[in-house]
Length: 369
Image (cartoon, one colour):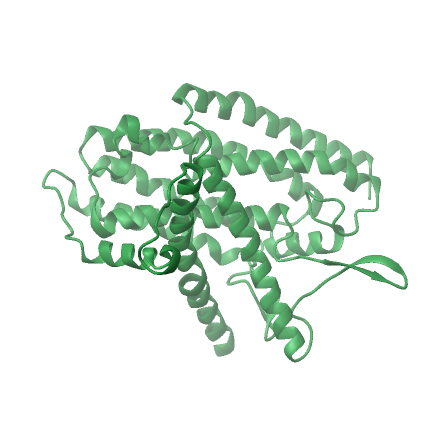
């Protein structure tokens, strides 16, 4: 039995979940409140700690100490099960995402499986079951309507989500996420041809299909995470709160945490597939001319440790930028009407993603690298 592998895997799991993801979830809520206040010309959290930085801690204490009330009319077993089902898939999906190069010679990915992208789609799609079960088990009309909306929305946009990544598989020839990142390190980021070695005609022609895939995938992630303008399952102006109307205290907090954890996971997948993952080359001028210098954890001594930490910081820095875009969009755009949401998914994105596959296949076939 490889005890070193077991120990390092446990350390990565605990480190990623408790030192990175959960703090990012808490401070994503804080960032959302501050950014929305800035957009609406308010102050936002500013009392608990300097600039309100301890507000997430106060909120966590409030949820843990609040009375855990279960309404008498609900189906109790499924009512309790639903919040866990909403939280777990978002956390489990992180397992296959490479969040760095190496640190102390250990690859910075929890489970480097050869069907990483299929795993992401399989596990992430389970998150909607928590919402559906919550809506059904609450025995109330508003949560039920929210659960039904979430189901149809997930079905509509998962098609576009899956089709959007097929051009990447055609180009890279791999489903392993670490290999997709490695390809971008060697060949250049998929939506930024100027970063890396995109010297041949094929790569420049593929920049357009890859940009379309990126846009379709990103919008589909908005829909899959129920974020505005796709938050129909919880539309407060219509459904009070949707699927979590009957929930309070820590069970409500789990739904809240699940939404933000899904945002972080979705952003991490976008970074991995389209934005080079943990890769951030430094432009440098040498005697041979301009070139990109790769920093990773393969060096010896403190240089290797610093490089590995730099890669991890780069990855989560990119994720943080995408989270700010999620927040900015929420407080900028109005909510879609339900028929508009369905039409966008079935009439536009599905067809665009499908045509994009054929365009990418033609370029790869007739313009070999």
